[in-house]
Length: 522
Ligand SMILES: NC(=O)c1ccc[n+]([C@@H]2O[C@H](COP(=O)([O-])OP(=O)(O)OC[C@H]3O[C@@H](n4cnc5c(N)ncnc54)[C@H](O)[C@@H]3O)[C@@H](O)[C@H]2O)c1
Image 1 (cartoon, rainbow, N blue to C red):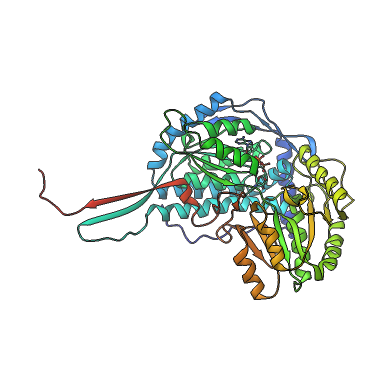
Image 2 (image 1 turned 180 degrees about the vertical axis):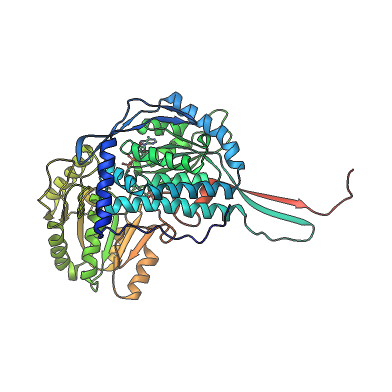
C-alpha cells in the first residue's frame, strides 16, 4: 500500500457557483427518478428485501424515499454470528490493508458526493450546505481513522531494561454494534463504523429508522472499498432492532450516538452478562445536550448575534451541538434580545432543496408535536420575543421561536428540545452564567462571547462541557480540528474525530519476554 500523506479536511462545495448549483439540481432530479430506494437486511453476502420501516421525505411526507425491510430477532443473531466469523479474516488483514479499504471507500463517497447530498436533502431534509458538509465529514472520518489505525498498530514505546523485551500493542475487541441517529445520516454512522473497522473489528450497523437509505449507501461505499461482507452487515429497523443487538452476548462493543434516555438504557442493558458470555461489553456513547452560549457585557454583538442565530436555528436546531440557551449579561440583555429577535423573524424557512433555506422542516410529525409543546409551555410560563411567521404548510415545519423570562427549573430550560426554539436568560455576571451551566446534567457544547482574555480563561477552566467555542458559533466540529463529544450525561467523554477515538475499539496487550538465553533446545 502507498504511504498515506498528512490528513486534510475534504473541501466543501462552492455553492455560490452557478455551475455547482445546477449540478446539485440535476443530482436531485436523477435521485427523484430512482426513488424509492430499496434497503434490504444485509447479513454477510445475503440480502433480504422486504417491507418494514420505510423512510419518507419530511418536507413532503407523501414522497417515499426508501422502502426498507426490518431485521427480525433471528436476523440480529445471524448478523452477530456472521460478524464473529468475518472478524477472523478482517482482523488478520493488517492495519495498512484495512486502511487502504477505507481510503477507497472515501474515494467512492467523493465520486458520488452530489447524489449522496441529494439523498440527505430528501431523506433527512438537510439543506444543501449541510448535506454537502455531512458527506465531506464522512470522507474525513474514513481518511482520518485510516491514518490513526496505522499509527496505533505500531503500539506504544515502553521502558526497556537488559534481558527483557516489553511490547504494548492494541488488538481489536471483536464484534461492534453501531447504532446511529438520523441527523448526520452518513457522517455519524460512517465515523463509528470506520473507527471500528479500521481498528480491525467487524461491524453490525443499525442505521436510524428515519435514514435507512443513507445507511444503505454507506454500506455500499465500504463494500466497494473492499470491506468484505463478513466484516460488515446492515440491519435496518427501529429501536427494537437496536435493543436486540445490544443484548446479544456476541457483541463486544456498542458504539451509540443518539438521545440520552436511549443511551442510558443501552448502558444498563450492556451491563448484563449473559450465561456463557466471556467479556464485558464496552459502550461508547455520544448523547444529547442542552447547550448554553454565555454572552458577557463586553461582547461584540455584530459577531455574537449571527453566530447565536445560526447555532440555534441551522438545520432547524436538530444538531446535538445546537445552541439551546443564551445566558446574557444584564447590561446588554435588552440589546441582544432585540437583535436576535429581529434576525429570527426574517429567517428563511423553506424546503431543504431550495438554496438559501436557513430553516428546513423537522424530521417527523412527532418532532413537530414535541417542539410545539415546548413552544406552548414557553409562551405560558415566559414570553415569546420572536417567531418567524412565514412557514410553509406542507412538511413538518416548526416556526423558529425565541423565548425569554422563563422561570428557573422550566422544562424549556432543562430538557433537550431538539428543534428551533431558543431561550434567552439574563445573568448578573459570567460567574453566575457558569453556575447555571454547572447546574445542568448535560455537558456537550458551550459558547462564550467575551473580549477580556481573563474571562475566556475563567470560563475555559470552569466549564464542564466537552467542546467550548469562544467568539464563534458552537456547531460544525471538523474532524482532526475539533475532536467532538460530551461529558456528564451527554456521553462517555469519547472524542469522535480526535486522536484517542480508536482506543475505544481495541484492547491493549502487553507482552514481556525474558531475552536471557539459557541454551538452545534442539
Ligand atoms: N453527542 C453527539 O455526538 C450526538 C450527535 C448526533 C445526535 N445526538 C443526539 O441524538 C438524538 C437525536 O437522534 P435520534 O432521534 O435518532 O436518537 P434516538 O436515541 O431516538 O435514536 C438513535 C438510535 O438508537 C436506536 N434506538 C432506539 N431505541 C433503542 C434501544 N432501546 N436500544 C438500542 N437502540 C435504540 C434508534 O433506532 C436509532 O437508530 C439527540 O438527542 C441528539 O442530541 C448526539
